Image (cartoon, rainbow, N blue to C red; front, side, top):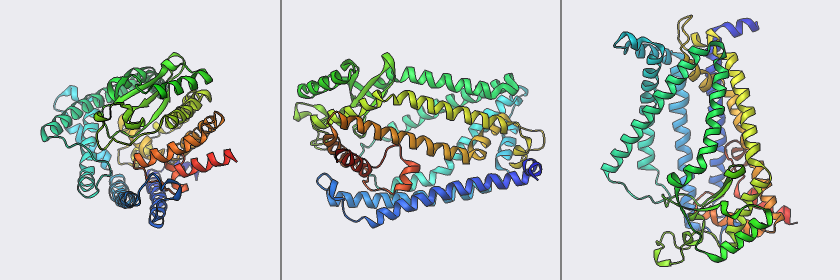
Length: 447
């Protein structure tokens, strides 16, 4: 029976469809729970009411409900229904055949060229699928964050640059993937793991040097009182103050944030200027009306930095890298067991013996491994939320629990983040505990 189950393309097709449907129905169920909470909480929670007016809360609540129902309908139509039809009628095998027919010359019949054409056609198809949703979201769901309007010329140029860069990166990635699998044969999953490890550590090494040009510009801390408090804090825990950076972000709509990143000589704490009161500007004439009063007091900023130092002291960066490596190894092992199994390709419409590399990667990572990916994502999110609680405890031990609690309240109000969420939805979707959960945790520590 087990042999028949594993080797029958029809059974495998129905299993893949079941994975797709059940995974998305579970996501929809969680979102319904979250929407239900938003429907039932009509007034601002007492703890955040000094920072969040009722009228703004009402707008945030309507936005959350509208966006939630839009996501549900869009998921059912474009992901579940269209996804089932694509799998059942062999859309991906048909599209790969179309890509093969686009080969105008003999050299273009090589699998690498056909794979590039297939991925580009698939990208266009996916983009067309999202167009109705993008139009509806743009016209019917009013954003709570006011954004500066760009001219049509700027939008066209931005779209063209994104298109050219995206196409170039796609071609390079597909060619590298196909040639690696052709060259390494059965050892290709090992090569895929090696490439991922190299890419991961390259990003780890490069990101500290890319924060300034891409996110914003490093600026000196003008507030001498805040500098004194931060110097005292970093000296207490043994963290070099020279590794604490203030970044004046390019986009003023960027949320207020601070984060710890890196290891050894590359470790640093980055503070966005949007986190500082009035963006850290001493001359209030330079502060726009929208920015006036936003941000945290000196004590609250110091408390947030104490939280980030908790990530450093607890070694969360190393632990996150280790957890990712465990997840990556399990993913590659499961992929290696599935990639060469012919009935999987037949299940999605390919003839026996035809197993295109790029389609195999897409089908297995995108559909067949869905149950594992969903559970792995839940575990990774649980780990990151645990890290947040540990960092909060570190700030509490340094005496910053009350200031950290006030900072959380102010940040949620400034960033227009809806303060109430369903606990089950949060556990499957959020990297951080909810604001109310973190405040309850800090209150328990003080008791």
